[in-house]
Length: 605
Image (cartoon, rainbow, N blue to C red; front, side):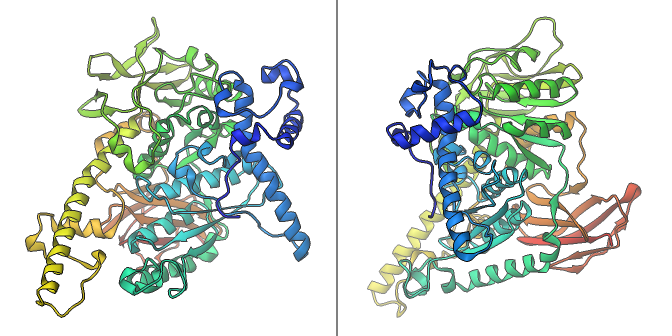
């Protein structure tokens, strides 16, 4: 199968086989009808979307069962293959990256955490199309979700590298490096072909196939060689420990399919943290005990299981710093009011108001209308999609960090037990990504207008017999810089990548507030924001995966690494041996040039 999803609930609700397996699955969890908010097992069945308010518990489990039923079917396929070949195989279907498009697992009914929470699954595979993503870097977020889901049982992660259909050399290399850093260990280069037989075939100037484009040959060859140069390191590579967690609530996915804004806030919070090279571990609500090794936790989305909420409360009281965006952890997995975390807060939160539901892809988040403005220090953030009123609670100590346009609190922070909570009345990461998309949009429009004008001029010349050259396709038409209103550097970057690059540093700094409050300092420090710098612990030492999302070559990228053992050698795959300066407490400092991607081997043996 290719890109399967969970069956629609409208189908499952009518199918007797689904009903029988659904009941058996719930019995296997030791649940009783009363736990499911119904009178008897005769009332237990998968329910359609339009029944979610009447049967909230059954709705919750129906959404999870969409994945479970698909996974059980895949197990049958794998067993048939293994019986036929007489050996164990890492077998799985290719999943679409719908978690990028929807920022919500329920969009396609494939929840990685449910899928891999069984010994019957031994691998997971996906692809990094990221069509209409805000940035191709969201593909690495998708892989990070796979990595988090596979962590418990060690399933193998494989991926297709999409290296054609408009993907540029820079985008190809940064995608591959970022995803390899987050656990992909089986790669296939995805491409329609061969050139003469594919439905995207034709002459080189009209095809999407990368074999027809020499600049893509180079990118594919380079990334294969860069990864190949560190393959022996990657075999044992593990992510460096992270003290910052992104709590992923599948419960919220289940109840916010009518508004993807919560999921996009979560995804772009991760993006902002990556832009600041802050190591982050994604923690699913079903494994919330993993928070015990973290000092900071980010949560976006209104729903959280009651069991996870209780553990989250204890974690904060014991000293954790918690970031809660609008409505976060206010309702349980059955969408009932949840007071477990709310009663702990130094703030009283009002009813959340949906100002503009969002159900499109990340690339179009810039079309969300500004509904209010938050002033946070010297920064202005937009209120997008949802808003929640806040006010300090009674005599509890609290500090208003930001205010809405009418002067009411928008961000309130305060101590809780030995911990700290920051409660927000909006979704701030949407403001972060919207600003970047808005900054690029007029440049894209200007470049397109100039391309069309040049195409028209070329057609006129050909018709007049002024040129003996055939009319080129739009992709091949360029406009002399002298005739362009675009800055030459902007034009170069537009051609270099699909991604935005002008991210607001001030908003990013606000998103990093809990990290600064907790006084966290990662073991790897990079001096340039937007560079993806991922530290991996290997048998040979420390491997650093670098991908450059500034979209400009960097002559000297400064890195500082704290190592528990003596560093003996530093080597760049691209630049060779690198001189380094030993610092106090086992740290080293060095610098490397960086174009799109590189791997740095820090040998400790």
